[in-house]
Amino acid sequence: MVSTLSKTPRHLSAIFDTGTSMEQANAEKLIQEAAEFAAWSVVAGIATVSIYDRRGILKKNARALRIFTSLRIREFAPHQRHRVSVRLNGQESLAREDPDGEPPSLTIYLLSEEDGRHTLGSIAEALSEKVKAGEVSIAEISVGLLAGKLQSSVMPLPDLVVVFGPEMKFDGYPPWHLQQAEMDTLPDNDTFSYVAFAHALHHFATAEMRHGNRCGVEAVTVYAFSVENFKRSADEVSTVLEIVTESVDELVQLMRDLDGSIRLCGQRDLVSAAVLEGLDQAVESTKQNKSIILNICFAYASTAEIQMAVQRSIQERLTEQAAAGDATHSLSSAPINMVAALDRNMYTAGSPPLDLLVRTGNTHRLSDFLLWQCHEDTSIVFVKKSWPELSIPRVLAILIEWRRGKSVEKDKKGALE
Image (cartoon, rainbow, N blue to C red; front, side, top):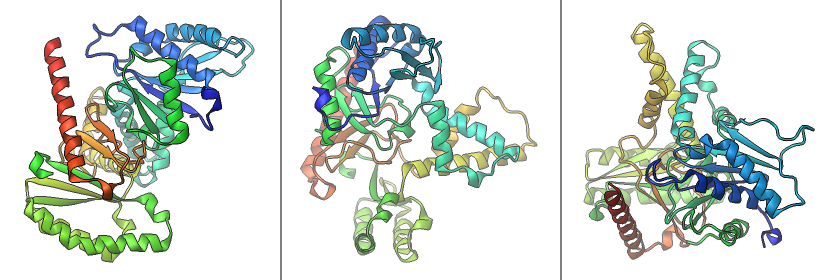
């Protein structure tokens, strides 16, 4: 029973699979499944849930979802309050059900693809206008500022994200909101049950989740050192930095053998001059190699990367407008252009799209890593072993399994066409 768990998420998020087209999606069935998911959350003592379906079917049926959720809460927990608040774009979209103004027993945030990269692009576009008007400076566009705008326009950060499907794929889910959430998968919407729901919460409570160039890989990105790692003891940080410095020559030789180039991704101002000198030499000595890219994320945080990309994209936009004599541009296409600018200004610009992310160390979250780069087709695999323990056969097995999954997916799409 979920009532015996040591902790439950304050905000539980679910990604529902709605098929490959609007015609295939059964809206009524999806509403019923989402209503049951929301009602079970109330039974578990969870007051905030968010439900993502890429095509926005639930958004179009928000009123029906609210009604069915209230009915399910009455059925599953007849003695609990059943006032449900449904929010779109971070705002309550439906009239209050309780005339006394009592707070809701459950708040549901409904999400679609529009709430992902395009929302961040729209925020960057709005900020560029404020910078142009002198209302804010580019330096004032901080991680905290972006976090506040994204939480008010989309939703608060979730503690647990449950993905319905055979593999961990986010299908366009808002990237910023994945930074520290625990994650779990359930087979699909059709087999979803209370037992599966309780199983996902059990994983959250215990925090123990299950789960090269010669292989045709064009780019590899490694999370070498997080910004958060600087908060560890001085001795531990010093030891890690010494290992990095001593390993640079060996890494350069390996990349030369593979005809690979090294790129450094992270906040350079946080790295000591001695360490930075060695890493810069590695980048310079391999920059002409073309067969494979190695992105080293050092002094890295994805939210800071997004912040940096927003600042640079706004500066680009203002420079372009000034050069064009402030020519009028199409407002309808502006957010899309800004999304492309954000892509171009990420540390990993020039690398191919992220196909596969392997998270080691028996941890079921992304830990502020490659949030923007995780797109609708990225597959995520969680393994128990730490990175030093991960053998070449295990890595090859992960790649083979991923390729098999892509082949099956391609066959399914071909059959539907």
